[in-house]
Image (tube, rainbow, N blue to C red; front, side, top):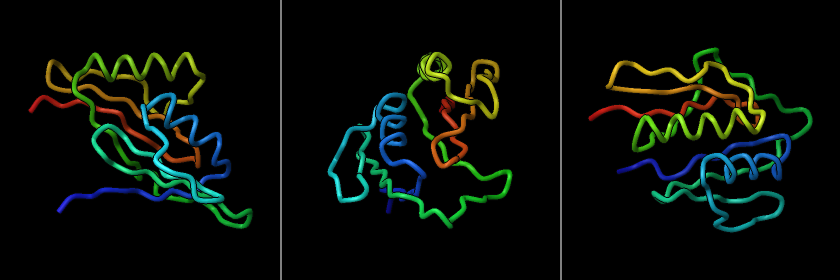
Length: 120
């Protein structure tokens, strides 16, 4: 069994779609008014739908979801692209010796997102 999708409600679907396409290489899978389904190269699907005006996205301070990439260089590359794009960071890029690298940013929602690499 594998986890194959995540469904997020966001204040602005178009803005959130651009974030995941521009920074995390998701591609449009299909639109379903008023939302969209995106997919990454591994086949993971991300559904984005509008957040109702009276809904909140309150989560515990530790809550986040993460994306693993193939190298520390890829983590650094995504970090630099997000930094240039004005993304807000919850924790800046950090290397853990030669075994891992990551950072946390705020994605649309707002949701805290980790981008990481770990040596296997």
